[in-house]
Length: 245
Image (tube, rainbow, N blue to C red; front, side, top):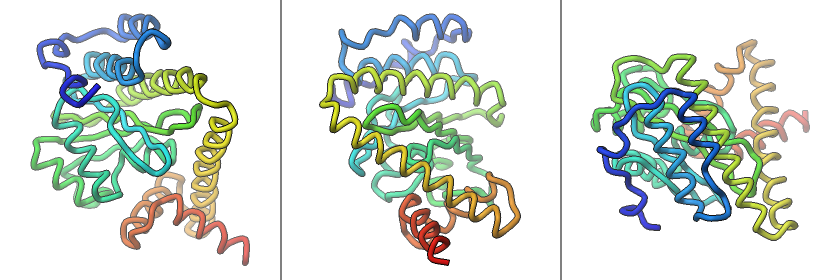
């Protein structure tokens, strides 16, 4: 299925759904009877219909260091995803690797990812949220939400997005059962280890700077962009340096 086929027309996704109806629809998504992209597209469309403001939604998958957008509800979402892939930095990539939820306000002068924020703001985006999918398969990823609303994402919206991200993770995990078990186990170990070393690095920064986990993560992201080094590689360097003493 190519980008044109994965694109969902506005008239099909403009309808809004309450959460209970959306979760009931999620439970009816089949795994064995449809391709991965179709299942993830259904998750993305339901997320768009449920989250306030009818945002654009996409799903980033990261496998063997290669990122791709597996599903999206509009061309702008995939365009902004691909701008991040081309640069090698961005909230959807870091959310996929770390499992974190990364929220941005485009107008925040002190926010993370200034280059990406400028690009998104020119396209009319006001806020973004990328939620890391659970590391339950050989592929890690993120659910990305691009909002045009003046309002920031509420805690309820963040919780709703997290539930959709969890379901996207279930889709990946179920389809992963069709892959070779040894290969699946090896790649899952890599994904889990990457997230673990990033958490270790955050702990080191928190101890050194007496700061919160959120501040530690921002420092890690800023340093990653400044040194042009992927966040997991930077985290590993920091952990190795600390172990050597």
